[in-house]
Image (tube, rainbow over all chains, first blue to last red; front, side, top):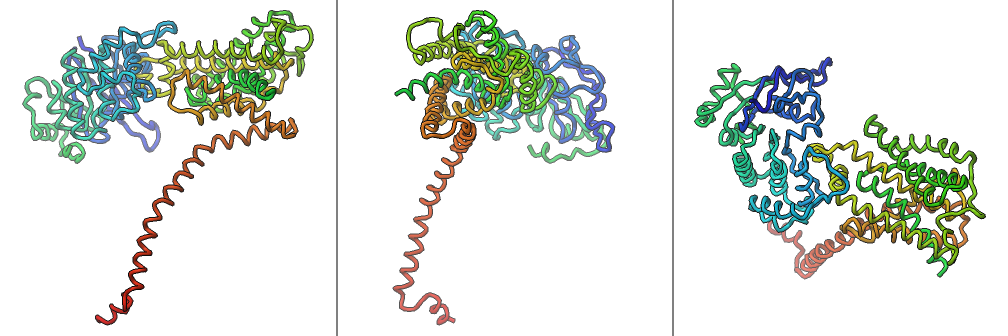
Length: 267
Length: 323
């Protein structure tokens, strides 16, 4: 059964004005359980709009979104958190900077659950568990459970956010250009870590990226968006053998134009 | 000595309000004006209840509940109706003026005489000592409960909402509900402070809320000037110190012969000074740094001009000769 189903999704900005922007033009998309999908596209292709629609930060204009068979089209972000975990582009967005590492992890461990006002927020038995999980990041953070999140570097924060997103296995993991704000080396480390975590737990993942190389290297399926439509959708063996040249040729065949976005090609 | 003990007594009662204001001001980052309405609301409810024969402890708790209700209204207006938080406070505060008048039935209720308050439950001891004891017990309870709350699952969620709403929502935390809870706690404490103040002063007055948020903010800012980057319990304890210091300053100002009717001008003036203190400190520091940097440059210039003096022909003249 498909984990994520998007049916005829249309999104408009400033609808009914001269500035109307038809950002998504009837997207149909379905993700199988355990699938790791990379979505690529230039500026204005609609990848962020698609991700925000699925996450619930953008109200849907037209269409339907189902996760695990449940219609979530009109649920808010907090409600959807039962099913969805998200890593943001800005490393500061995914964590609470004034809270400690362990408090952030404790918050994430109860994602989408009822929180009561008598049980301790960070439980003693959690600490052991958190330390083991933090050790898998290989950043030495397991010794700094009580450190304020704001003291960590962008890469460290993004790694912790990733851990938070997978601490309680989500039905769907959304990665919102989550390495774009990092330096190239940290970006590569976080990307490898992402792959490792997603594979280990077989998490159904939707990753949007600007970076063609990581879209080709990671994931079992690649979708290329263009002007609010799916231009290329490659999976399986074809995806594994895909090269940049193949992708550009495919894009030209399907959309009838050259792909020209330096930000994507050069990254 | 008398000034010090009475300042401690007053400071303890004001610190309950300051802690209430702290919840919205620092945890949610909102300057909630509801405070100026919920403070007299607590006083009004308690005074009316005591005069009608309710026990003082129950009457005080009723004041707290009333304030929490006022906080719920403000919380609802800002989260569900999306009215900007500063306006929300002004709206609730304005509405509460009539509510308070309705509860009291007149502009002033006197509690002097034979009525029982939390400050004359036991007959022994002088008024200031009892006031300090009652204040200390209440503040200890309040801080204890708050520190416990912010370490529970829900309290952690509330702290996250104040810190990063995107992160909170992404982890399934209902931002609106948490904000309303903080609003209720905050205004409940403010009303509790008003209720205690009415009992210690011996009256509840319709206009006793005016300027109170300035007093509470001053206590918070003083405490933050004294210490930074300490755990929550220490921050809350320092607010008591801040409130006591503030009362001491006011006591000294009064002692100097300033008309008590003009006191609010000093409230405003002092908070302005406290709020601008961090900036003034920074400017002063920058001035020092600049001054320190200028010295080596000056030295270099003087050595160059000295060198020029000792040359037989000035550099300009040398140039001419070469040509």
